[in-house]
Length: 231
Image (cartoon, helix red, strand yellow):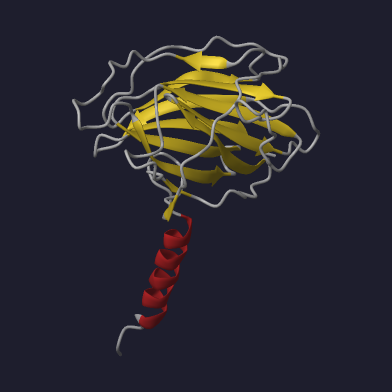
């Protein structure tokens, strides 16, 4: 009698197809393909939250993942400092770390959603904190974001444009739509300061805990991740 292999093969095909639809990279965020426009400028206004925690300082190690700010609600903006020698490459090279990619990923089993920012060149310093509203620098115009709580994410020194002013990053859609992390927006790219806003909708209101971390991909790209507690 001939062995019945068809059901087994069919099952493997289904499993492989399912894996392809849910796979994220080692940064814990899904790849994207759209090109970002050069962002505008932003504000550094912040609003105190409730539970402080001390950020740490350190550089990512090749192929590793390092937490730089543990789960907490920052009472003041959490800042992680890296010493970056400018210019990072001699002229006509890029003077600052350059943003090349933004990715988002959802991790329901682990209880968080993630947005990552990948840079060519060294890891810039960064600062993350809650604000009443994300504003553009100069005019102070509000940045449109979904949700009821807002995070400001700032990098320095860094840029997201090339010498002609064109955007350098691949980005996901601005509306993310995860249970708590609802969307993101560019909020500034001016004189070495690169800023973004995150829109959150916690189920019970308030300000959910965040976590920050870093890694280095095999190609040398440096990644900074912002994790938000998931509903």
